[in-house]
Image 1 (tube, rainbow, N blue to C red):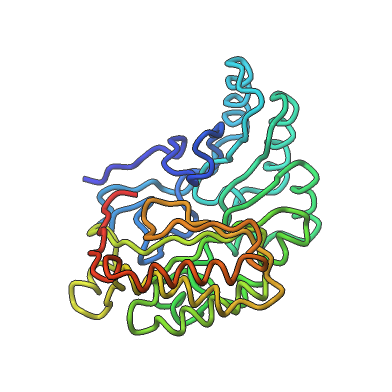
Image 2 (image 1 turned 45 degrees about the horizontal axis):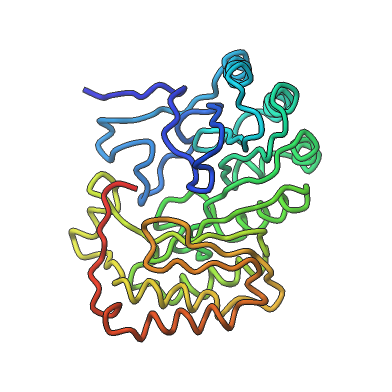
Length: 303
């Protein structure tokens, strides 16, 4: 029997939004087919949060309740797998109401998919910016169209570039996620080169490294069991990060973060253009450390 999780239940938010006010806007993910992801379903679909957009009055009620409980001065995260899939006029009403009812809101943010952004016009994106959407978090995962296709991401490198630039051109900050190890051993080099290329093309406000960990609940696990997909060791993951940074263009001024428990190093930069050499040298120290070289994988099953 399948357990269906209500769309109003908030399952995930970025680590950086740990102390934010969470407002449920959408439930699940409008795509929900990525082979490495088990956020909104198990591979046998025994547990699933189906995609949906909450009624506007239900969202406004959450905001009213937050105001009554004095949630002023907090950042606000519009929760769901990709809140930007909701109609623009709906999102504008939500954001305007947040700004009206809550005082001193530090920022308004949400997850986004590239397809959401590409479906919206330049005018719509600017409407969201004017309403007060400050930043979106988007999964680049890899800059390789081949890897994105294998992983059923539902997009390609050029679409990611177009969507990323569209966000930035609207005056909204962009935080991209890069999934270290997503190409496995077979496509590691392509993953590095193409990811650096796409990051260089976009020059996002921020990009964040995440390390691939595969639980038994996701489709990619079958490829690991069969030997078709070989996971990288911790030191190989750090090498990928090092080589992505080394292959960035000189134009890239992004902030860079390793702000998740699944990573094997925790270096940050407020401007990678200024810090690149320091970043690379620090990563080289990790790579050449005998203890790191012998470190086993974490093999996390819960993120």
